[in-house]
Image 1 (cartoon, rainbow, N blue to C red):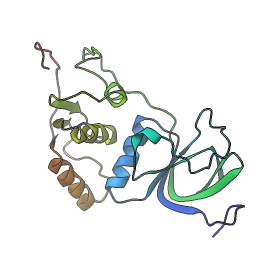
Image 2 (image 1 turned 180 degrees about the horizontal axis):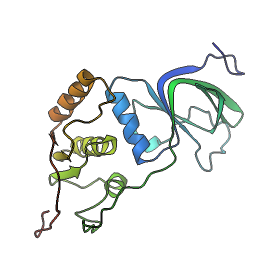
Image 3 (image 1 turned 60 degrees about the vertical axis):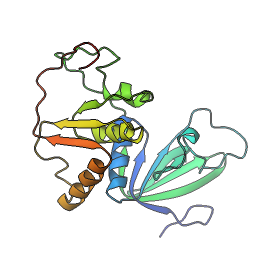
Image 4 (image 1 turned 120 degrees about the vertical axis):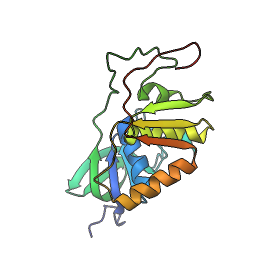
Amino acid sequence: MSSSRSGKSPMRYDLLIIGSDPASRALGFLAHRLDLRVAEAFPVPGATGRGSAVAAPARQDEGPSPIERWCGHVSFVGPHRVRVERDGAELVLHAHHIVVATGSRATRPGWIDFDAHRVVTVDDCADDPEGQCDPVAIVGAGTAGLAVATQFAKQGTPAVLLEQRRSVFEEFDRELINELFCSLRQSDIDIRLGQEVIAVEQNGQSV
């Protein structure tokens, strides 16, 4: 096992995500719910303060997180190894799977009238989910949809996930996915598979 220049062994994860966007954060959430050890590594603009450690929290306002976050200059040193350097300190992360988040943008179908208030994209509600109390419907039970639904549920907002497909996450073990869905339903998230949305209409204060 290789080690960093500090002499410490590389930290090992099932999944390492380089960068951060709504899709990658949702992927990290799903991997954690599947009991995988997950970490994120990405640079933080303006991180030049004295004595800043590589392990400094990336998002101090989020509180404790099951996903470990490492900030600094990120570079590959092997097929499964990544070095994170910051202010003279460094460490090596080892992961079975490494995902590079290149950025994503929510799809905006032309037949849906988005109004930035009641009909929004996942990016909009992920940026400012606070203050929601009415039940929310989320179209699409992918990683982003699951992450946003969980975010609302934590605030006490009931969420309904509508998915056209009758089966999702087929690349994962079905027993794990069933356990995940059971856990989500216990969190007041209603998952409805095989439900195609053909129209979105506003009626006063509801959609």
